[in-house]
Length: 541
Image 1: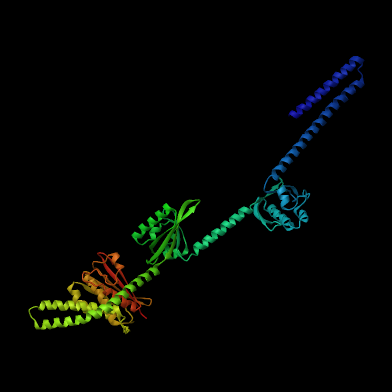
Image 2: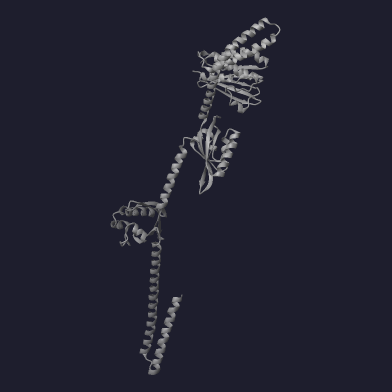
């Protein structure tokens, strides 16, 4: 609007000047003829035409100056970018490219404008294939008709490979024909290398975690499980679907162990250092108990504690072996002691028993005392016999026997004592049990020791059951007596360990020795006020 006003003012001023000039000329000449009128009209036309030409010239000049200025700004902008920037027309000819892009493809001294990638490929042998591929990639973008994004790897002459995150933007005319293509490539080489290092580190960590032969688990600061390795899942079994988010103490079998676990977690949180906390009893899928020796290590991220890793080692077999070794060591000591004591005691014991028997037969006044003395001497003799069993291995003669028949023989022997204590033996012989190779007297001694313990524990009923599983005969002896404290169960079978007032603690020790000689196993479970269950497993073959 302003430009048009300027043109109108120019024309009016021009006409006014010419009118003034003509009137002055007429005033002095005093003539008004056709020549003057024609001159006046021509002057007006000249003024209008020259004004219009001048207007368009000025406008064109300003437009040209504006385009040059925009072009310079665009060139400055794209050259300042660290990305590869390229503008192409609808036919794939280069319109504009920044310095980075020209240096990348070794085209700094090439007049690239108006040339296609395939034409520019002739100027550089190293990037010949890369530039030819650009045309293929551009064509894919045109066909898709929308912005595309991909990672492109471009080799450098020094052997390094640059990775670019390339975005291609196709522009179309209103009729759908191709107008222009904008290509922007960002150098993400360092990011890709960092991601590769991170990925390698994660893979190494994952391999160390997943393929660790020992159980490993991760917890948050509250003791909730965040991750476990396959070895830990193998121990917990079907619970693995419920592991994430579960509290680690839910898998601890013992109350005291739960307390120790909480104490260990608190110590790690306070010290931000790893600690070894000893053994914990973990429940398994088959209700078995695994002993895991655990070491807890803090997970530190940027100096802040984000969780705790538990490195565990299954020491169940090791602890059982240690217990056997300790028991064996005790038996060895007992054996040495028994060998010396038995020989030293048995000879004078025989003499004492003989003289007491002689006095009992010839003296009537102290018959009661003599009977007590003989009973105690028999008890001492029994203890010496048990010591001799521990002192040296007894020669065993294994033959095929039926366990139910052996137990009935023991029942006949113990029936009077059971009746005296108001106990009842209930034998379930419904299940058929195959004969096994065993030493009959040794197993009878084991049955006698266990059943007598149940009778003396004030049991009203003693249930005896037989089963077969796999290659084993399983005999279960269960009573409803007073039971045994949990802390004392683990010590059963140790020499001289007994809860009885007159017990020697050698009966179960001898029983364990006999069962081990038969390649079998004997386990105890007991609860105060509810009774005791003994399970004896003997191999069929």
